[in-house]
Structure formats: C-alpha cells, structure tokens
Length: 68
Image: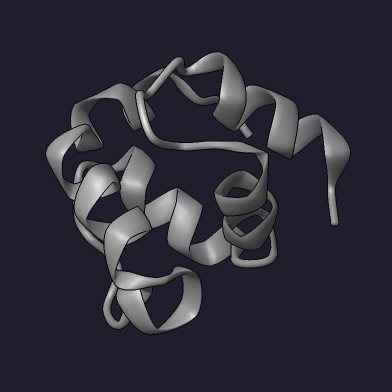
C-alpha cells in the first residue's frame, strides 16, 4: 500500500470514500491513471466493491486533480 497515494485520494474529499476504499484503490495504480483520464476502469467494482465503484463513478471528475 502506498500511504502517500491513500492520503491523496482522501484529500479529494469525496463523500463516502474512506480510508478503507482508498487503501483498496491504492493497490491498482493503473486504474487510478484511468480515473485521472476521466474514464471508469474495467471491473473496478470487483476490485473495491460496488458501493465504492458507484461513488467513484459519480465523482470521477475529481480524480483529474490527482498527479501521480
């Protein structure tokens, strides 16, 4: 787990994205790159759960603020 990446995801201040979801997402840097480009990664719900994926889908525009 990349703690710096977890902190950056939390800093996006997306309601419903907690440390647990941020930690799960941090294991998939390629998916984060896809989110940054404004696209939803294939099979993200399987990786982090349907609730987390739904929240991310609704707030995908905020991921463009991340710089890896």
